[in-house]
Amino acid sequence: MTATTREFEIAAGDAGTRLDAFLAAHIPELSRARIQSLIRDESVLVNGRIAKASHRVRANERIELELDTALSLAPHDITPEDAPLDIVYEDDAIVVINKPAKLTVHPGAGQPAGTLVNRLVFHFNQLSANNITSPRPGIIHRLDADTSGLLVVAKTDAAHEHIAAQFQERTVYKSYLALVHGQVKTDAGCIELPIGRDPRHRTRMSVVPVGGGGRYALSLYKVKQRFARVTLLEVEIKTGRTHQIRVHLAAEKHPVVGDAVYNAGRDNQTSDVDLRTRIKRLDRQFLHAATLAFTHPTTNAKVRFRAPLPVELSEFLDALE
Image 1 (cartoon, helix red, strand yellow):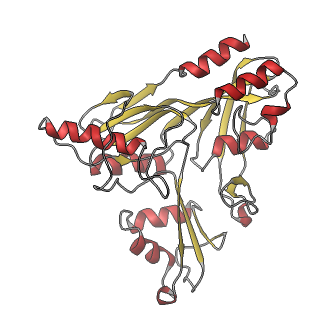
Image 2 (cartoon, helix red, strand yellow):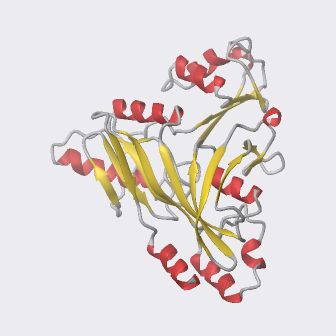
Image 3 (tube, helix red, strand yellow):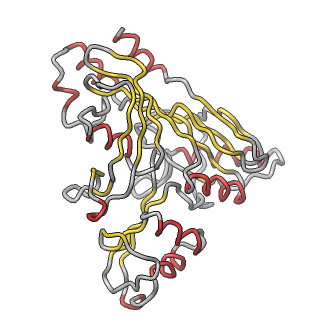
């Protein structure tokens, strides 16, 4: 599960401002109360360290804010793209998407098009053409481009705020299927290790002490199926840190199969030639967001969605058997 990180560098003119006030001024879509909650949750770092809401920012300090949710709505000028959407559920408030691997969720630097949001904008425009009121898509959470599975997208500001609050309060149920290298010894367990930016590779995450910029992260796992050299796990994440499952499993010496960033070359180190070949052909990481449950923003009913493994992953397991 992916989280969103926002970074700021304090200009001289902002020096002396309270930390919560600075963030409220620079992230207008978040209330000051929500920002204070994020600070208490240790999701805000100042120069890599946890700070209080009352901290007076200084010139050139670096502020890093990690959100379990991507709380900014998609801008109107995103180019609509007529491309397939696997819609699991849709009503006037939300749409639940089964995202394929290799599809980035949100446009960003270097990728203004070819994303899930571009497809959603086209879909919502079609609804508007049919006289159905449809606002811009509100991305509430993300998945890595190389991860498949379930995402909920808000269709109204009220739905966006309602579900975003559930993510922040950690009441959303999120479980994944992950195939990992090696034989996991215990049938079930938990990984409770803080995660932060890798101090040597800033584009990566790693297990980092809380005092050194790490944030609390908790993953629960249970074994679904055992094979000779790999293990299929169901992983529930209680927090939504960036790359959380991949970092936690790699720290336990059981990196995700096909994860080119965190598996330290394990894909190529297996002595099983057939397995090495199949991993290379897979051309993605074996990580799938299989289950998503939350409270519906308008009915207040508990809703639960499941997405089966995509064909390339189910066929990979069949070949192992």
